[in-house]
Length: 262
Length: 307
Image (cartoon, rainbow over all chains, first blue to last red; front, side, top):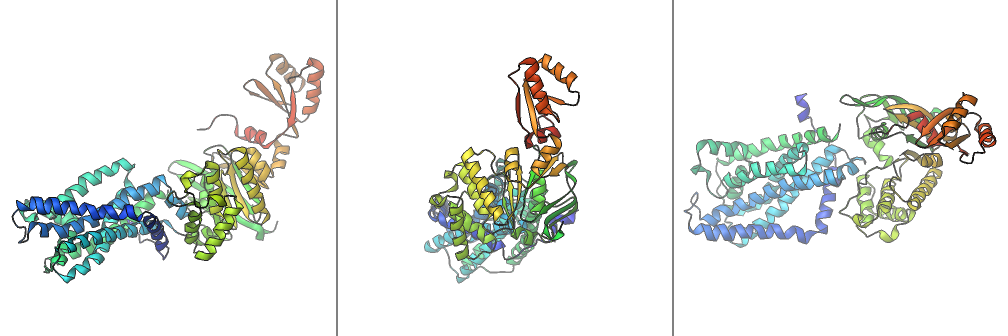
């Protein structure tokens, strides 16, 4: 029976139709959608970078603001895709019954969930690209490799959206999302080498971050690409992401089927 | 009977949710171009059966074929020829009325131009053209039901499923839906309807099936069911010990059903009893009325409240 959590989904081009529905809603309200991802990183850059940065010694040989800037891009990948596929997907599934409406057509549930995850990844792409432009304007990008960050944001987006969708599949109600948000996302936000290098943390905590915090890998890769600091230490992060993304993607679809198809 | 006219065929169809048997080993056939009504109290298994027909609930056992396709093998092809108006409105609140239809058309691979044309025609059909650019939340519940009906028709379905289409609607809206259902049936659409309103079933259905506790307890043409189980007419009298005594003694074959302060008398000679009552008691509280499907329903499923 355990294998049923990892059954391969039945997908077709119809995934795009589900994605398109969310895209249409997004476009309808684009002003509301573009402002928060533009404004939020500015606060971090100004408050932490310029403010706190005056007191902090260089991290990994970087000025504090240059250290946190690429991490903020990774953070926006995490937040946008995670929250899209928890709260927003839950509203569509539970309150609006959008999934029921769509599965009454030739589109199947696997495609609905995959479409939702790809939409979450698209939010990651849109939001993180806006943040990337902001740090570019601030002169905090120093390598042309930064062009690889937008494609990376899609992969990272699929990963976080899939993890989010697993929570959505098992959450009894919308309030329960407080648990993954405060007990998983918030510590990950702080402890993933985002605002300070993790080498200062106890070894056990460092190991925990490397094994269980996707943001650690996302921030590491984002920084490496923005600043052109390429090395063999990146392979573990690339491998981690490539290994876990399909696992969570498939698991999310199977957990959702267990929830919705009785 | 020509088997080519059978559009939906269920054999030993069963659905279990854990210990609960929601649909218990039922057989039925729905003929092409007819309106077929599922009746039954809450929890009888009507919606569960319908959800299996449109391939969103897997069967526990038995078989179910729609247009000669197996629901568990060809769900996409089956869903492509079905339109469903579910019990709970699940219109998309993020879109206008017109855009709801257009987005829905996309799920059926209907090209954009064609979708636009059909959506506009359907809004005309449900008489809501003037609401085309209004958001769903601004509609009354009757209007929402009409939009749900229009959405169910966007793929020009062979089979239209209406799950309690008029629950909670005012009489005007209900009659409008009935008119639309009749005109669709005339166009040759096969209609499956669930309802709690016996009048609705009697008005619309060519054939009805009464379910209770997951089982089919009776099926047939509405008029035939009324004739078989109740007869032509029903006598109703106000509750009175003396009259009940008289009826029991004088007409041992009549079945008395006491409902609050009324007594319904089911008999094969209601008119005779009626005149008898009038003569003997000069009794004016007696009413002789036509028997209806509701009498059949209550007789077969009992008066006990469900849920």
